[in-house]
Amino acid sequence: MSTIHLDDNMTQLPARRARLVLGKADCAAVTETVCAIVEQKRTPPAWYAAFAVSLAATGMFFASIGYLIFTGIGVLGNNNPAFWAWPIVNFVFWIGIGHAGTLISAILFLFRQRWRTGINRFAEAMTIFAVACAGVFPAVHVGRIWLVYWLAPYPNQMDLWPNFRSPLLWDVVAISTYGTVSLLFWYLGMIPDLATLRDRAKSWWRRSLYGLFALGWRGSAGQWHRFEWAYLLLAALATPLVLSVHSVVSFDFAVSQLPGWHSTILPPYFVAGAIFSGCAMVVTLAVPARGLFGLKSLITMRHLDNMNKLILATSMMVGYSYAIEIFIAWYGGNPYEAFAQLNRALGPYAWAYWLMIACNVLVPQLFWFRKCRVNIWLMWIIAVLVNVGMWMERFVIIAASLARDFLPSSWGMYKPTAVDVMMLVGSFGLFFTLFLLFCRFLPMVAMAEVKTVLPRDEREKSD
Image 1 (spheres, rainbow, N blue to C red):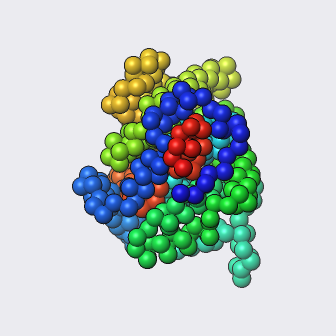
Image 2: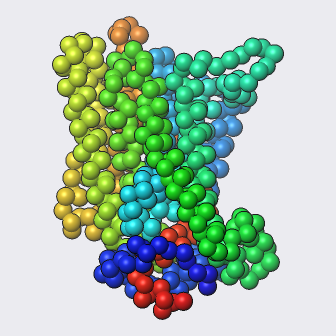
């Protein structure tokens, strides 16, 4: 077993605190528990069932995109004035989901919150897969997808240059940067664990494949020194992206003159909502994963309790934003803004607005009680409802605001089509397909990081 390079502060953790994180697991047990998921010859039947459903939904996703490309943008429910509808709602939703991975991995790492070690790996993976799902929708909703490369700023014979003053181009830069840094951060942290899988592999193709991506890792003191510095620098680089990326996404709306969009509160509002929905998705994935793959000793109730506290805190931030929006509409004296808020609460999309309030503000208040925070079924249901509410929030902001703008003569109603619904369901299929493949073939818990929170006596015993 390779030696783990630790500093003195980590080796002096009290045994009681370490047990809160890991129970009775030692270094050897950590390695066996995580590697057994990847090395097992027989995959659990539940994994095959979940993978079959998600793969079918993924096929439906790409089939609907192909139908859209060959038939035209008219197969979607977008109309005049609701030119942006479900594709952009899905885009903003998936970008928000990807924020929790960077929050848990980078920010909590910088603040030395060691409880993150049990859940940071699959939270980082969740970020990559969510950004991949989000990136599809801006490309397909433009209609002529085969000309989407015109948006790229490159010299060409038509002298086409994107408008760099447009927040839509800011989106491209911010999201591509965020996705690249998140991918590097995820991969860098996985290198020592890939080397462990390489050393334990029994077949030549597994040994070669894991060895290729382990980049020659041998666990020397010099490699650990460079690894820790590189990980720290990437964490510092990724931290401001949590605030900047969804702020830039909110500029798509905030810089416009449309009532309901033209507000300076949207950047912090969007960031809080993104972390809120991302943390809820982490709980949604962690609860079944820890039961299916036998990770209850690594993803403990303490991890889930802390995540539920984050959900409660960000829920209160989101609820405060909802209240401030109403206050701004009243205090600003703008009749169009006042109507936009009344239309959300009392208009034709009132059902979506009140469902949003119930799921995002009222339901998470149950987490004030510890019995609710440690109840597996209840926390999972609340996390699912939070994601439903956050999707509804994006729908209310985008579709409801566009459907009724300044002039009643230009009002319209947006109704989704079957293709809209299939693309939404299919995007979840793509997300879960990628996540299930990750769980089966890559270490879903950061073994090297988990071992650093073990007390000295357990590490020495396992060596």
